[in-house]
Length: 541
Image (cartoon, rainbow, N blue to C red; front, side, top):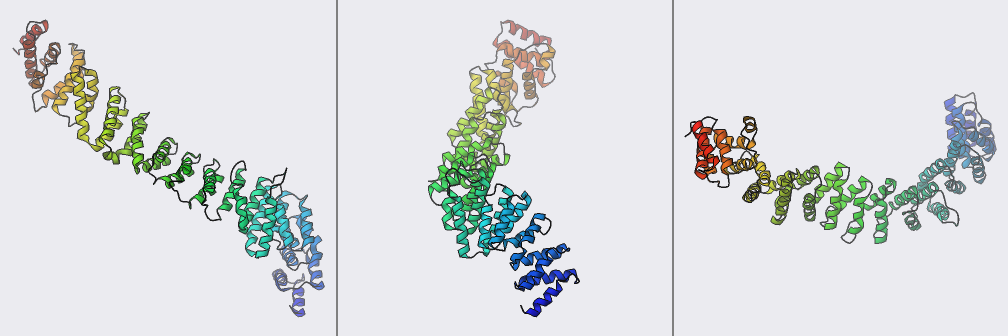
């Protein structure tokens, strides 16, 4: 810059010039000016100018031109706080060792907010001394000071040449070396790791790995994992186990960076057992990640781990796990076993619905097991039976119906009428239930009926309702079924005839045939004589 230009810029700094022009002149002087006595005197005189905007611009220019004489005034502005305190701290940091030392001394007794500004200013100072002082500020007990310093240092890293980067990395590595009887605060150590990661020094990898596991505090482990995320994914088994352990940590600050690294790590059959614990992680996000990575492995241990998710409180996770199980052969087998052992009706329905799309692929043996369990539930009036039977109907509805009819008939032949009714009632709920089955239902209800001849009791008797339905809507006369049922006792038949003899039309015809059958089967007994009497009194003789 020529003397004439410099003198002109100095004239533009005078108080009689417009404020915007003065600020512009100070800015230009800082970019193109030289540090000589006249410029230094002028700028030092203007450091206390009453215009705040202009004063801040002059402070910045004094720092750029490295005017050592300005240091006392700059420190005064730093102590005073206000809008120009940060600019003054940055300017002082540019003044070499003296300015750095003065700022460090100032930090010793400054309030927290001011110390943060000074730490950031040292980090942006641009000199080796300022950088070293900023790294030392990372050891400050105030986490805010540490954060301000490390953020600024990391922002300055791209502007550093290889030599400065190496020197800064050396300093950081030295501070991170374990010292006997002394340990860095977790915030400071984490900040040093962040800075080391930004520097990209190849010597740092082992430093990161050594801080991944407990008992290191979570913030330090998280910083180490974030730093490892800047490196290629690990390939060795020990490193993978460390990562998987961190991914399953209860603190998501630790788990999240570990999961980010693991996204690029393939799952192999050999490492599968190390991945499975992620499905027991406290955080649902970790479990979802594990589901995505392990869903393609059709192994019994994977199916068991997936099945355990069904009790997790997160509904989305439960549904995702069920879908994964449905896609695996071992998963489908595990679902079927779990359905057989379902503890509640709701649980049974959830498991049954999940298996509906693929129940046709089940073996005959497995379907028999499901059917037998359903029958056991049905005999105990346990509503879990309906879930199992609904699932089986998805595969072979006719087969299920035939099996239920066969089971009911077997029980009836063994005179276990009450047990047979569990199956017959279920079959009777189907509108397409056949007449023969409906007769079995009506007849078994008759066997367990109290057969009270009082009108009120008969009106509420379900067996009579079932017979009435057959009488009024049938392809085969229900009397034919009665005649072919020798296991119905005369007393039971008399009860039927007595009731329907009081009816009209087909009911009377049915009663006449039944009462005659009683007379035929037991002519000399009291019930036979009562049947004969009823035929006469009802006009059916």
